[in-house]
Figure 1: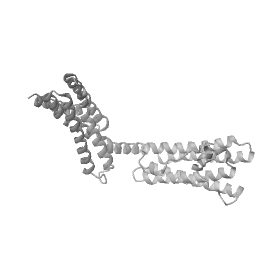
Figure 2: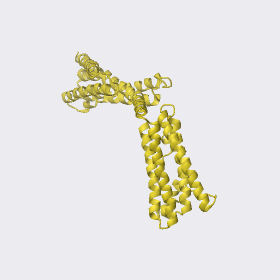
Figure 3: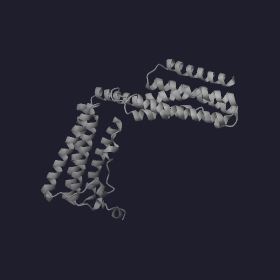
Figure 4: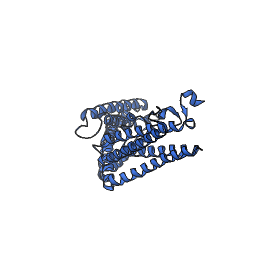
Length: 325
């Protein structure tokens, strides 16, 4: 009933001819996806691009074999049937939704595509009692199995350990340049630059609500400023740091969060409880920044701790002194 209402045909109602036609269109779609991956990755990851080019060629070979089978059994007129016409059939994500996926995710998607295609043929073979149909579906399942073997051979040929290591390093570097570096800069700016105004307001007024408002304004304002500054400072074309919108978003959001971390405790109405909580939050913020610098920027931990914790402590002390005066 659900398949009828959706306008889709149920899988177990497909004829042998329709199954072959569906396989032909599916192989054609997968070849296009693989070539799209190869085109996107060719400049930065040539070894992986070569794998996807080879897989696309394998899909073309399978499609030609399927067409020959169809011509032999049913003639040259192939019915128009695609994945979206069959209820419960595995679907592919639109190519434009996969354009920004990281390298490792693309590899995972390719593996899922092969697994799903093979499962389709195996389940189709299991459900039929007709000897000729079972033989046909077994041939298709064998074709997908050989495709997986070919993909493994392509991996061994093109994706050596050195190539994997190099490409993974490049992917990690791009992640650091686009997200971690601007995000870390924002977190440092938001955490450190807002310390003085927030604690100065706290000790000058003794009012937790007004201190929170000062912290909120300082955090949001700093986030907007840092976001626009990062996005406008470098278009990423020559530096390779990636999309300015992504970098601006990362920097702006982390700047805001860095300031809000020690502004939110001032929602507590008791002044000293709020202040002590905010100081504890600052302590963890500064050590977290030092850890991120060490983890992603390869800054020696002692140097990172000295720069961030000591610098943040001085700003915190300055804010308290100014507010107390």
